[in-house]
Picture 1 (cartoon, one colour):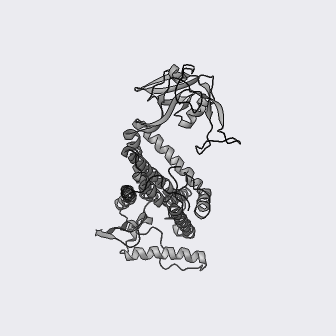
Picture 2 (cartoon, rainbow, N blue to C red; picture 1 turned 120 degrees about the vertical axis):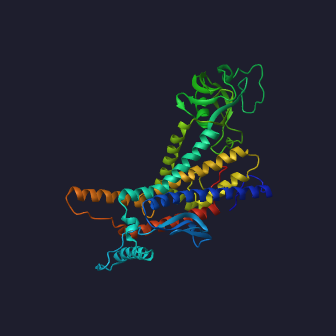
Picture 3 (cartoon, rainbow, N blue to C red; picture 1 turned 135 degrees about the horizontal axis):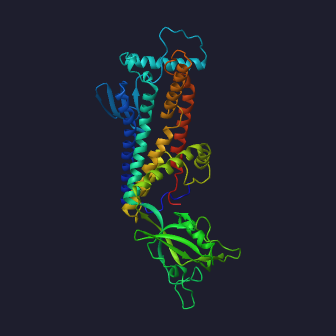
Length: 451
């Protein structure tokens, strides 16, 4: 489509590393799916629900075995997994006549009939059907799956933050003077001493705050310096494990102007556009700084919030993905992606030359952590067939049965989720369409990780 998909040479080594990265992703995905379904399976069996299948992936089994009453297998379409619990829906009572034959009613009755047939085919053990569980037990069974993804995400964030560290803004070097222009390369006797040297900044100082703003990004820190010429700026740095407060007064110098893409801005006559800004004579970069275990849960919470925000904004984001896939609009870096997109991203990171293995491992683990948190948030959406739909149904049943008890009415029994099947099918179609769109976009117009 007129663009270079990779910003690095394609060699035999890079191809092999790409494949290795994809294999690592597939293994990580299988572990995530497997543990998610294992969470459901463990509590279903604990509560004596009959489980006939445990599957990783969809389609015809590539490999399977049977242990007890459950068949375990791996299937080729790795877009999820499932366990088959008998009696997920309340079946129609035997002998009860169907009085409404409309489309909606027929759809509901078909769902109930399918549940009844499943129970009959598995030995007629209605007492072991999922719908027979008390609401709180059904909630535990359904929460257990997403909870496994949450635990995986927390563990991976722990490895990242405590084992590797968090990307933190750092002063990487300082100079003795303030160079008058962007083209200047060496200090002269007339150049003023740099504010960085006067303030005592050292290479490796970790920036903890600037003017009261904690953990500033490189762009935020640079912006504060540029607009503060002649004004003291309070900067808190961490050096040798201790915090130190510095006061830096940027001086004014002429610097070239760059646009948002990092391209030099030109004047109408072709000359480089410049501006007078505050400078301190220091280089700013990022380094991995190890965090305490106390930082893991807040980081996980922030990722949960980001994933929830993405889902809330999903309709307009999907419109942008459609325009990118079938039009000329660029694909934004914060675009939602499918598992194909995540796998491709991990492959690209793995095959990059000149990047330390530690940085590659950090990026891959970060993507897998974000994927698991995303799966947790998505599955908690209160719509069937997602786990959150069953949780919402069980909560409604608990409220309904409790209300009937307080009012002295007879127990209404298990909730009839079959009535939601038409809406469930709409959700299934929408999720399928979304997955197909994202997979197509990830193939023809992938997210460019490298800007």
